[in-house]
Image (spheres, rainbow, N blue to C red):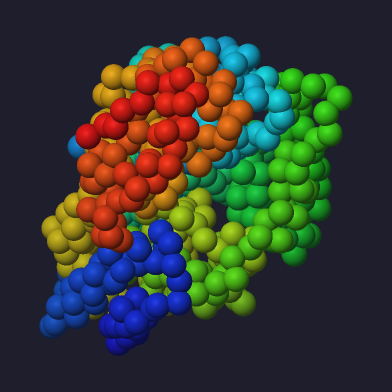
Length: 554
């Protein structure tokens, strides 16, 4: 088994080092972050394997100790949001969670778009918002409950606590699952704790606005309730399932649940199976209805044809039509990124546990959720874009940890050596790998945060940024839902003749973002100098001739 760990780490690094088949953010993160993390991991595992003793005993983790560790995760994640991630929402997904939370915090389901912007809203960046033409309101096309939780915390001025709280809840629910599955095993809780707290994906995703920490926490809560095997707990699990399905996308939680429904059928637990199947049928109907209802709130014309991208069927058709042809290489990169951001021993132990799927139905259900999710996302959306680790399986990291404990129990006579290896790799992860990952995460977010702060400080009515100015420049074009404050951020690519004429009629001050302003992004990504000045040269005279007061921001 020790040779397996070394071989897996070495192969992962070789794949990362030689992989050249993909482009975009995934390729950038693979070469800027993941290959070096895998190299460091391979070296640390090799060092940890030197003279592994067999006398070490793992400490027992009681409820009080686990609670203290969970609270520690809360503090680290909350502090890391500001100290590591600059308190910034980098990706459009994160920005949409904040956007929606602001709307919900005002007691609205959608924000009303001012009359002036109804025919020109695309210039404000409407990516991931419900399509509508003309637009009377706007809200993201994601399901609402992740943002609703953030809005609830916004009542105390701390929407950023959502991720840390979900990370903490996930830790507590994982402890409950471990105690249910192995009530008399003193080592199982310790192994689960170090694999969870030692996962950089869990830790850093908990600092963000992503819905993924909620998926992980609520999936584990669902499993803890499911394992209790009472009617009341099953009903509570369905309530948790309703919330989890409605966090942001309706597909994620059902893929986690489906194997457990098959488990009930295989065990002939007909009543429980019928309850869950009926419950999830109702849950699915509600959340599949939801987008159609919300669209009626954002569309001005009640008789307008519903466009593609409102309901989930047309979204599926569009996704399959436009899917990335580099699906397999992308999934390999996703897998490498997942390995690079986990505890050093999670994947080898998880694979060892998954081998018991034929003899243990619970192992089959846990592994089945992972396999189903990976295969589904390989077909639908192999390119995850931004994120720590592989975020589409974030909600199933708990599955992986429980499988790893099953794998631990297959070690037999090697358990003594693996105890030493676990302690050594955990220490190496905390002292070496996590600090490196923290620096990588900070640099990744800081560049965009600096550019966004510069845009916010511009003294003008509008500031214009183009998609091609510099990599990921489009993600810095985000505006508050009620368009309060100035400057508003505009996408140069959407400034057509009609929008320019309407925009400049009032002679506003328009600032064009220069190479200097967006340089932090260019310096971080290193794809050549920004081209903002060159592209601004075309749009500037058109704005001036229409009546705008135009200048460049340095």
